[in-house]
Image 1 (tube, helix red, strand yellow):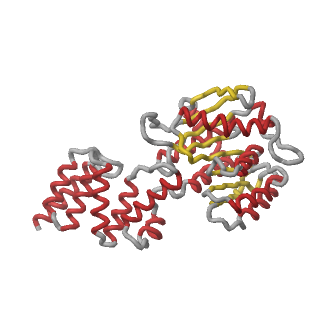
Image 2 (image 1 turned 90 degrees about the vertical axis):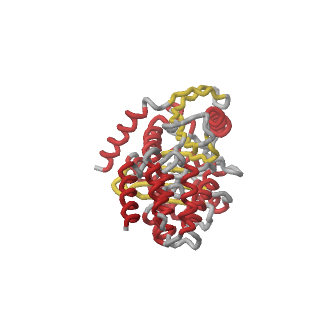
Image 3 (image 1 turned 30 degrees about the vertical axis):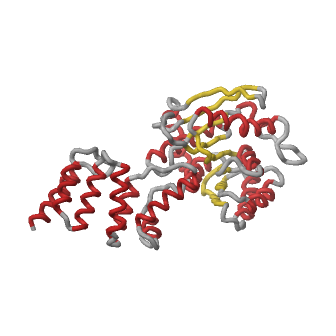
Length: 382
């Protein structure tokens, strides 16, 4: 049943993405041939904006691009993950040659070595020259291509920061090499690995062994996640693994939820406002791009400030909101809240009235502003 719903979801995404996908042909010197690409840009992509987007390279783009791009589009719409640029590399009849490895060294050879260089020295420069892609890069593979993505880990400085390996068909020695390499990585790297209880038996055995080795690594720079899905075969596990992997990779980016609010915001040694600033600074440091302040996080910090009776945080938050959202009802709403906290209901009422002329936000509209006005008026009359 899970696989049935997943197929429906993929068909939905595929139907809606056909109009959005950009199809490009890249002439490759390394491959001596053209290579077809599928590209999805964020919904509100604007090349004039001073903003860069994480880049996701999808191998086996013939069939893996749509579920990846669909998940990105859906989750970024709800601000759970950032907007991303997704690039699918079509492999078609060249797949086996692209992903081949030497029978002695178990590293790429001939055509696969050329394909390896195509990705690193032709595809990435092309995409970054055409679009506003950041240096936070993710690479995704399934089966043979999930083995192939690991070769990029063996560069002195890996060009990808996150690896999504969905039911990889590991080359001999890859498990041992992965263990050795991940132990000594010195930059933050995400690694996601998945199999299912109905996966191909030989692959599942190898993947379980790999998990036992990788999970034993004590390297704070490696952020590792493994999933072994119930009732999932070699292809069905892809639909379950993609959102889990994205949630893992962009965990820090996510809006403040109830658990984070309770366990981190309220217990933070400094003020709730300081927690907010640090969270956004960490996002910029970790992912290489600035996250826009979102209303969900404003509400969480305001709630924590009120709960802790922290006037300093509420004052700083109000100034930040007015700076970031000067034309939104948010600025008037939080200014009014600050004056209420001071006991200055007259100024609070003025702020709420002025908010009626501003643009509504996700959670604040005219009805809420009017309700605040009536409540403040009552407080004035008491």
